[in-house]
Amino acid sequence: MYLCTVYPFEFRQNSRDGRKDQRQPTPASKGKYQERMLKKLDIYIIKKFLGTFVYAISLIILIVVIFDLSEKIDNFIEHQASFRDVVFVYYVNFIPYFINLFSPLFTFITVVFFTSRMAFNTEIIAILSSGVSFRRLLRPYLISAILLSIVAIYMSNFMIPQANEARLDFERTYVRKPDTFRGRNIHMQVRPGIFVYLISFNENTQTGYRFSMENIENGELRHKLMADQATFNPEDTTWTVKQYNIREIDGYKEKLSFGSEMDTVLPFTPRDFIQNLKDMETMSYSELNEFIANERLKGSETVVFYEVERHRRLAFPFATLVLTFIGVALSSQKVRGGIGLHLGAGITLSFAFILFMQVTTTFATKGNLHPMMAVWIPNIIFGALGIYLLKIAPK
Image 1 (tube, one colour):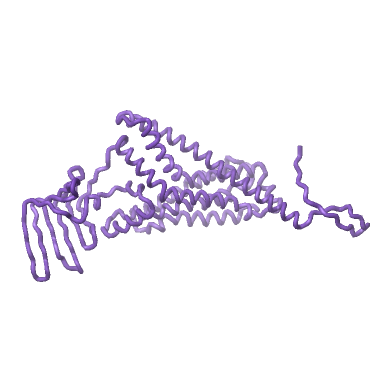
Image 2: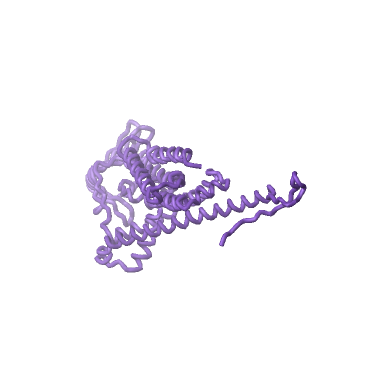
């Protein structure tokens, strides 16, 4: 059974014999038909794009969950985690994190897979032969990629931080021991003009050794507290200092006081200098910005890790657009190797992209490369590659 499309026709005068037996489509009817065809084409490609993406990401998440469960089931049993907590607290919050992590990679594989199938079935050739330009063919791909990028930005900055908080709390309780702080020679500004020094801090006993706190105003030292030990009391958020001395300076006047033990209120808590890089996974975008500002004030050496995370939350979703166009350019041509050749090239490029991003991130955290440049350089380079591939793609 064959399906054919009939335009609305009008009769026109034949210039040779005057008969009205020659029928031709009117320009208006032809334009409406092409518009309907393009809308159907958009829906067709968008359905293939999103449907294949959901199917592929569901399969990989299922595999990841199975491997994760096989690795941690002994911990769940040993710490007597309930089935409800494992499923609804851990894995419900575990899945969004890995969906967002694998999203750009599987967007690329999705585009390569279904576009190469369309090319293999000669659908791309038929679409281009019908008068649809290659640029117009990219529109449904662009719409789908933008939709996935917006979802990824929302998940990275708002949804996943909340999910990570519950997931990390579960892991600390049932999977691994809580992280301990092992900082030495801590010297930072905890508040504007307030500088703290500790030779070491024991998180278990909440005690710091060789403690000093300086209050500097307009470049002049106003107050200095020194103690052999400073212990934090979480019940009333006070500090107990032992073997202390206090200097109070007012111009040319100086007052000294000494003591063996004293309870006092200090303008900071251990959380100001106990740092755990996993905490940034639980912060929304606004919280992360505020935290980075506080870390800069302290002069923290780890602030670069948080800056990389902030820029990555915007650059990683943008990679979805870059990899989508590279995937279309690679797989829109029918080749002798078929789908397998396209998938091989696509997977190689996607892993090259991820490796390149890891390398540039390392240059930011261990070297002098600016965090924003480190995160966006892979998008810029692969974006230029995508533009070049689209330019040379058969049209």
